[in-house]
Length: 469
Image (cartoon, rainbow, N blue to C red):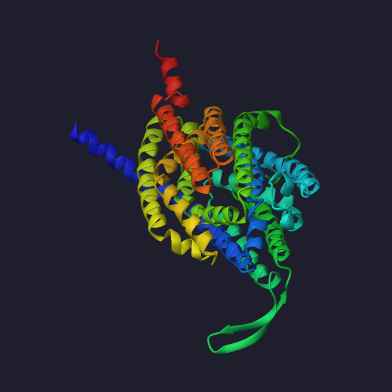
């Protein structure tokens, strides 16, 4: 028995290099994105609380659109990772070609949708009237390059499904670097800049919040072009030579995975919109504190989403290869790493919450409220991390139906109903709203763990049972 345990431990440890080789570029990409989000928030924050509220008031709508795009990528991830696991590269490349069609169609539709609704979004989000026009202008400019944004999201997922997490990372770093540089030039007016003992004039457009939107739009335009070229030059899954006309053989399996995931992301993101709208109604202090706390908290989900990428890709490969043992070992290794990382990140978040919030706002009320809710959510980090990893494994296996149910029940049954009751009926504030959010995260943990342990999600287990006479 002892020898068997040692063999299992050795087999599990052998997976560590593979897991980290897939996870670390995604983590670094997330670090860069979060760093830029921090810089964006800090730069806009220097313009005042109104500017921070104008930018932050539509953040959840940005999540809604981005997560819906990401759902289509998940469909291609499951298909391509399984095709490569079963050593069918031509089938994987055919799917990559279909992802090009998806980008063209979805990007065009979303462009028309976002631009036509830009004036209504701040109204729906219950943004304070004095900043509605500013928020609408920010949203409109941000989504002008919707097609390249779709390319960044979907093509990035396609490359990760082939085990290439470094190319999306490099593109992400480029996008973020350009965004920060243009922020520096477009947000502020011409001024004198001091570097050590040197002082020199620096040109600036002085566009304020509009400059922040223009910087992001230009950066995504560049990123979309670069990642498209990278996909077509890729050795393993380049779509070059394959038709982008609709192919039912590829699209239907991808859509079977993507549609439940899209509905899940759309439903939960719509919940984020409703959640944020209720918070916006609490006033500018609550909105600013919520925006800053969300920005800070996003950094501490990086380990979770890095491991989710590894879990999804490796599970798809193991399923394609019919390797049941490797799938079991993956779960043990990734879950153990994830819990450790999220415990550490949660401890850091709890200890340094006030200092982190003060990086983005000098308003004492915002700092106090933001650090309070961050310390609350820090205690739930490890639980949420486990549900993220299990969901990644389910995505790689093409099982997106039950995650859809879990997320919708948690979002609307706990977070939205709870927040409505606390803020609208009982007159409570942001702390109560974030308490409902934590309750949602804990429910997801229990639902995902129970579903995983029961094993019905695993196609290889189902095949084994069917084979038993």
